[in-house]
Amino acid sequence: MDRRTLLAFILIGLILVLYPLYVDLITGGKKRTLPERKDRVEYDTTSAVIDTFPGEEIAERELAFPFVEDTSLEEKKVLVETDLYEAEFTTRGGNLVRFILKKYKYSDDSNIQLVPQNRFEALNIEFPDAGIDFSNLVFQVEKENVFVNEINLKDSLVFIHKTFDGVLFKKSFIFYHNKYHIDLEFESSGLDMGRHYLLSWKPGLQVTEKNFKEDLGHFAAYAKMGDEIAKINKFRQPKGSSVGILDESRSGKTKWIVTRSKYFLASIIPTSKVASGFVAKGEREREVEDDVTLESKRIGVALKMPIEQRDYLKDSFVVYIGPLDYHILKGYKIGLENIVDLGWKIIRPFSIFVLWIFSNLFKILGNYGLVIIFFTLGMKVLFHPLTRKSVKATHKMQEIQPLMAQLKERYKKDPQRLNKEMMKLYKERGVNPLGGCLPLIFQMPLFYSLFVVCRSTIELRGAKFIFWLKDLSQMDPYYVLPIVMAVTMFLQQKMTIKDPKQMALVYFMPILFFFMFKSFPAGLTLYWTFFNIFSLVEQYYIKWKTKPQPAPV
Image (cartoon, rainbow, N blue to C red; front, side):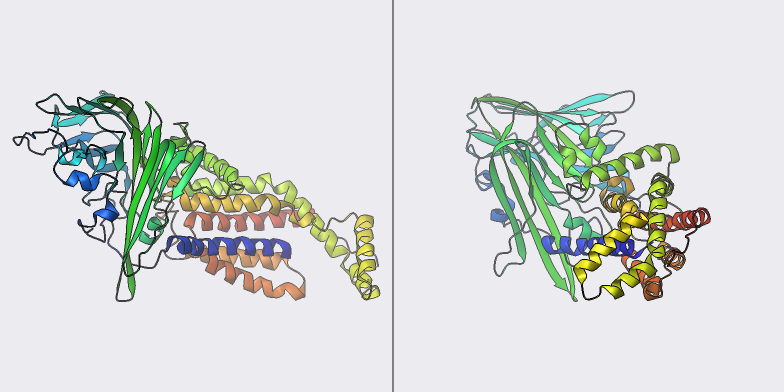
């Protein structure tokens, strides 16, 4: 590894180290300790201005239509179970109150629950103009449980609310085997509902990761308006208040909305017609206890649906609740996959390529640690011809060092002449001064894309390798890999660097890289460790094949 390569990787390292600081800067994240899977803040139910979507204040008062609610109806809970999740609906509004994923775990090995247990319910419907909020109404339901499996591939759940004068509200859900999405159909008749209604996911998402701060840093709302995807995650902090407020409403053709955490999302996609806008509302609260900042965050979203015939409407939606999985989301062909964090625009194609290789290798190897090792070996084999050219170019540069020293001494007072003579020397000796950088040009974007894949994609979340490495998306808890990586880097440097003026790098660089990599995802450190090991083997092979000859003086 020559000096140019080292400097380039130092630059990459600085980018990787500073990136989390940049995330902290834009998200306002601070250090804290919080119990997992519990909301830190009991939200104040009187803060309607912050917490509610348009029309909720009206809905809290007496309903502005001739309903006589059946007091004999009691709120009931309905369990829906598929091979991927367990969901719980309430007859109050026909809303979703619980959603447990079967294939994803918390760090304590219990199943993840995505719907926070705050006062909000998911998939609620409101008519702001009519002052109607479904969470105030109790619906009738024909089933107590729904089970979908390999035998019963599809099933439905229907909530109905009728009044004595013929007003009808109907929410129908369809559940599928081996799919995270739910079809929702809403029908209303018998009453002038106004200009639009809201279908919302108010509660936001539950924090699911052991690294609470990092998970909160990814909380955001998204909406696809036309061909553009709007991202909303900026909170404003009113003077004298400990509560940060997110409050944004936009009008225009809206194809879908999303609220997300680091690894999971809830999305509402209208399929019968395009929405006329969206609303995003949230709150962030911080408290300082014993010099530790405690933080909670919620970002709710709602689709604004136009009403074309005021006394009757029927709309359909797809509701996706589940993992932020690039390949699953891409299958819907509506651009949802673009919210997966895969790096800058120029890096994204490389990240998609790496993720595709990882996913297919995993089908064969069944272990992402082995996938990373095989991927590293494949990269070394693929770039071996370039590496040999790089080594040859480095050796040629070493051969002409005495001649270059003579030219520098002879033309030290004439820089232009020196550059001219240097170019002439390179041409005569067939030396390309940039030849040593060839492998690096291709490896830099792949290296950064690998960092993004290891850090952001759900495939690596909870991916075990061996013994102490139980999650390749998190740092090595015992620093074993960073130490091995630093040692192999020292050996590689010792073998490569011969210039006495650069010998300090032999000792300095492994120490620097150790401190950089000790907090990186273990998957990335595993890649770099085996990259060093394979590079040592490769260098011994090239050294055996290529022996530099001293340049004639």
